[in-house]
Image (tube, rainbow over all chains, first blue to last red; front, side):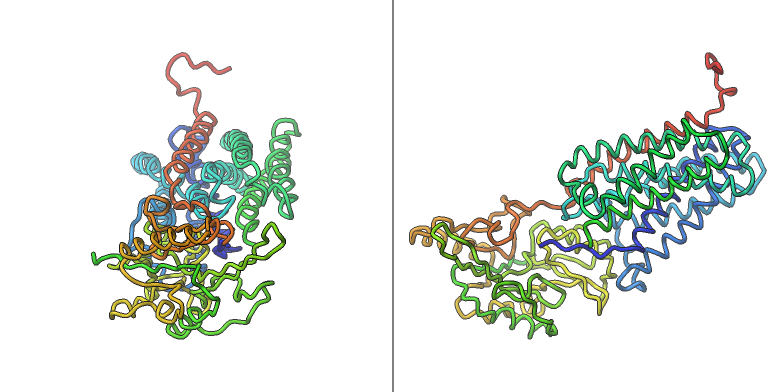
Length: 274
Length: 261
């Protein structure tokens, strides 16, 4: 009889918020490097959103330890093949990039902007890392379903992108700057991410087959199919493509995507641990 | 590195007295737990942070309606390639000079990744100390010339302690002897390093298929897919990143040929 690690709500929140932080950062970095002056708000919001989330992530991780005061013990060892080990390092390094990018996002000088763009290209790698390593972490355990899911990291990354972009889009709306072209671009990028996420999710379930039973059947199935597949992906996509062009529709769709991302982590973590 | 030590548990000799379970509790100062009704004589149902040795009482139905009673004193396998050790991010889980796997209680910070990485469900989280715990192979005893408490207490030599190479040779002879006595399903579990997990330093002689004892046939190292999973994640990053690039690209600034449709 195998044992589950009792990673419960704090880790569900960590997986979700880490994804949003990574997704927001790499979205901002891509907008920074490939977008134009009209995307400046996207860039700022993305960088500045990632920073507090990473701090929160660090606190959640430490609080969830059996002996929180020993969290530094993870940083005396570096095992490149161990997701838990490089995860702790990756979170720290990503936090540093997020901090520098956030500070530089306030500067109007062209030199600083150029430095910020170059740094963000490296930071993006760590953003992608934070967005996906949590999936690779659970898919390399001895437990059924988790250990069988080869695309767990890929799925978490696509979900991190869609939720990170939804979070930026929501913040832009709340800041009262939804009309800018940047907002439209974030929403377009979010649509692409959701489509990629749907495709990966379909292959993920196909590869798992009956091993996916903990989420596709049983007591977690309604939440998975209703909360993630329908409300978190299909409805927002349908609203984006077919729905009214009203701003309110975009807000509802962003909220649904965020809730779906949370549900994804929740069902994956909790379904085999209860 | 010193010569590898091992424990050989010969289930054909086990009488289910649980002296090993009690000796383990006493030596390691493990507190009692509430007994559970498991449907058999077995108690407890699983390894816990307070139960490192556990006698399994397996009732197997035979064709003639008889019941075969299989007894097995189970313990941490001290795997040659240990999932818990690979998973540990603090270095708390280490391999001793004798080849056994131990958890340094002063270093473990309770992340619990090892708990989910044990292919046998051995490692358990101790909520009192906030750390992971499991059989230590009586690390304090073996470093002072004594065998593990369980092996010492076993009245039938079902649990034997010694150098691994000697015990494996002994175990192989024992299997042949049992087969000669008509126990056709007798086999070793984890004795050969080539079978799985680099060989178990606590290996077993079973009288039936591993599945009958709720043991996995060919357990695998949980970390074997880190590379593949990472490459697939990078693929996902490229797809998502490309999508975002297309969405944010400034058409007016593109060089040549790019017309705004």
